[in-house]
Length: 408
Image (cartoon, rainbow, N blue to C red; front, side, top):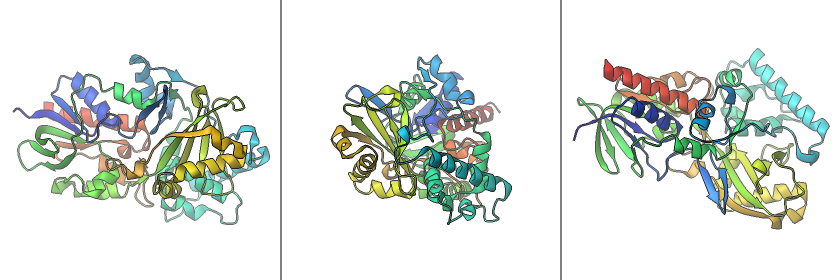
């Protein structure tokens, strides 16, 4: 059998973007996906006529987000409702004056990161343990970065913050559904885990769950924790890519979705923070899109702790919501879905962050190997990491580089 022109390992946002571009260029392409669906860490789930995103849900930097451009072309609708972040519904458990003070504390902390970055490059070195809002800042980091400030590179964080436009929209039909739809027409092999890539011959040889696959070029788009684990044996020349992946671990952010009964006393697209005085807390999006749902969101070590027990997140969220709305809300909450990205064998986390002192690892990971083996994914983006649009950009870049190398 004739080798493929390009094999793409991983059918998430980066893989789909690369596959679309190369397929449209007339190449013989195959998207190779270890799971039973397209989308990777973008996953729109369905329950009883309702749908919701268990993975990425917001089109960040939407005014320059490639998925926002593609959505209407594919028949999807963009919702431009302002995110409710940072505003507590009815000031429950978080008085307006405290909300203002907490926001000021975050602005001042970020200003310190810019003006006096520590030599360690470790964001937590600029925390003030005596500041009332330090736990709040730690909680925000777990939402934004998926990890605690102790594990966060200042240079890496600021690269994202400086590029982010502050415009955040949503896909009405679901971000995951959009990314899956973008793969239409691209050949895909599902349930086909790749376990090795051999570059010693004229063509690259991929060992997979469905046998040997040969290709002239290969684009690898799997998450960094999967690469660093050795789950895919890479050629010896790619050892530095494995080291780079280890320096760019995935943080963790999980969601729980409750179906809410009798929600007339809530307002659509509002939010509450469980407890602004502690680091171990979740945020809750109330009636997203006006649907009878509450979407809980938790990150960092708290998310890892709550993944251990199947019912732990639901119990934790019910307790926090009951503390704000009264015990009567417990019987109105039906948990219908929950993500556990840290325990997903082909994800192992949510989105990447650079360890202190390792921001340069993104450029190393994004480099090609001998013009034959390419890497893409959100972790390869210098400034839009942790996002689906960052993944899209790197997927397109890898596809163009592979195409150029084939023509050469």
